[in-house]
Length: 102
Image 1 (spheres, rainbow, N blue to C red):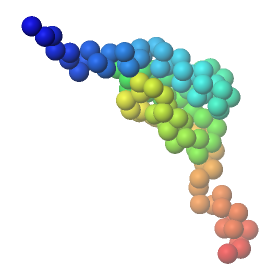
Image 2 (image 1 turned 90 degrees about the vertical axis):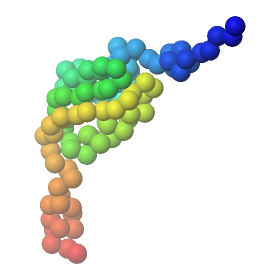
Image 3 (image 1 turned 180 degrees about the horizontal axis):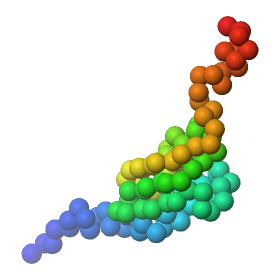
Image 4 (image 1 turned 180 degrees about the vertical axis):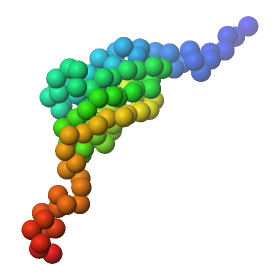
């Protein structure tokens, strides 16, 4: 009698362990790409869901970090509660506005 293969059995080789996902985000995304030192952002991964806590220098880096985390194999979603030191996306940081030019 033929044996049927389940979807779970087919997907199992493509799934990554949470610790491997976490290591890649810390080493590649935060370390190599953003040159962040360990400890500024805490990364936890559970069942492929990445949680980022801590702080970054510029607000504009937060969505980029999220997108890069989503591109890591095995990541299902990203939840973040990152704080930032400088709001480089604020409207008053627009040079045309701050100098009075239009």
